[in-house]
Length: 565
Image (cartoon, rainbow, N blue to C red; front, top):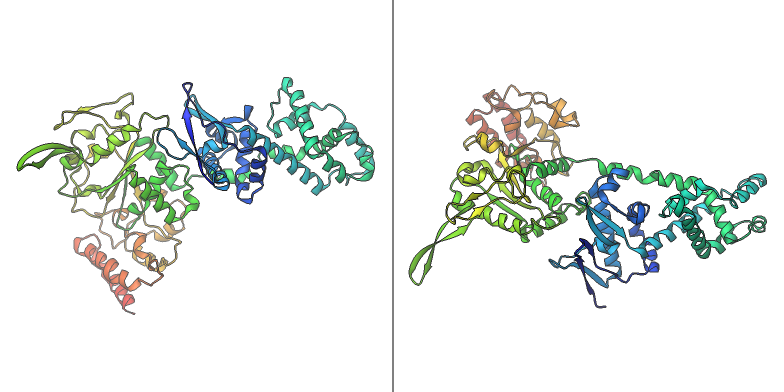
């Protein structure tokens, strides 16, 4: 089967749409019944029940709980599921040929007061209403709330189902996603009951008891009996129902969420900590969470996370570099490079790493949703940061970026080009706090970065040696027993152990958790190698440098003996 390319475009009125994608109400309904689709229906129903079946993820998150990204990811992943199930079209952004999934689910999208509003496709709306009707009937007959009542109550329900009940009618309209104002209720209710009777009326009559069928005046009357008996079910679902716990869980922020929020606000962060605390390890997840917010990081696994991270690097949305002592302004911003042409040497201005990614980010900074770009600086304090950044140190401040109220620009030294830093560029750096042979960052540099401390912590990973971790940790921290029981380790002040020199803080030199992972990917035990060639040499270096006192030698000897057993 040939896969059709359908393009999402933007009209002069600012409406994003790709038009009809050729999915019928019946096809949508079959997809909704698929087991893979069940986890998305809850969010689709929230949009169904908004006025005109349209809303924003921001508004939905405020109204029902959960994060905006929780709802965005549900729409994105349901759209991808539908595309993969049907396998007959791909929706591409007309500006960059990138595949887009939300237009599979939504007929249009537009910005309203800087918030993106979606509208459900009409055929999907019809199929969701049919889904709710069948679900309501199944609940009705499964719990048998009518036939289980005595004859007097049955007569009352039958009589009430024949009358106009404004409260019930509004509830029904809300449940099926119709307008429920006084003006619209009667018209909407007629449409609901008519379609309900056409699609399910005969089944309801067949399922009712023989004595009851004789008293039911019409299929519409039978529908009213079902609605009267299931109003508690409808009310419960509209009030939040069983999915509220899932949305509340999705709204709980993780350490990664908090760091990304800081990064979005400050634009520049430094992950600082001792060796082995996971500074470089955490960068792929932070980058993916910022650049691909719809990627399901929590359930993807490390392998798929790295694949997404490598894709971002290939697209030049993430650039990784390491500072070193010979790096300078010419490598970072721009400089003169010799060029040999026909035996003649000339000098040309060549853009550095930072300038190149700034230009790349600037190309996408004017889009309706600017794409984030990240430059990662590993071992930031190994370089002369003031010399490397030069006059750009002012421009990287969050309020000095291009497009901000306090935006600044400078004329570059070599090209004489007017240059500014785009607002969609983010700097993520790492800093080894244990290495005092390196230059510390001056206050001017520090003021422009948010510093995120990285502390050693117990891991639940297979192969993590918790006993060894505790034994080594107590060389640095005296309150380790309190620390290991603490849920919020970043809020607990660390008390230095007697074996730690008073010149050092525990968090700056305490050996990190990655040193205590004693199995490789193949499951081979690495404990001997870790101890003899990594942990013990580092501890001995600490003793020679005066980080640890000579009293720690006894513990080091015990570790050596343990390695040789």
